[in-house]
Image 1 (tube, rainbow, N blue to C red):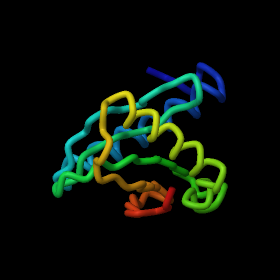
Image 2: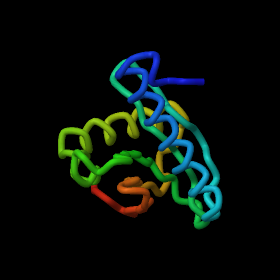
Image 3: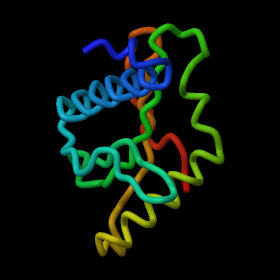
Length: 124
């Protein structure tokens, strides 16, 4: 399917999905279990929720820049974005009855063809 023909927004979404697929594949290959992809609420979305090999629940934000033309995508996860992800994570935990589940926030970037997994990327 030629997503570029669908216009710039669809092309961006397609690239985002491709990056999220690559990140999920990487996590599985690294021993993680995918719990949820694209967890959505009225307030926003968490790209991926996974469980690491030690049983920690990991909320993952995926950012990618295939060309590198907009700089390192790790810098796109601003403090406002971090707070939004934390609010969504709290909602997810409450919905699933997790009151004392060990959690962390990771960021996976794909930048100039290289995947980088930043564990404990931020605290919330």
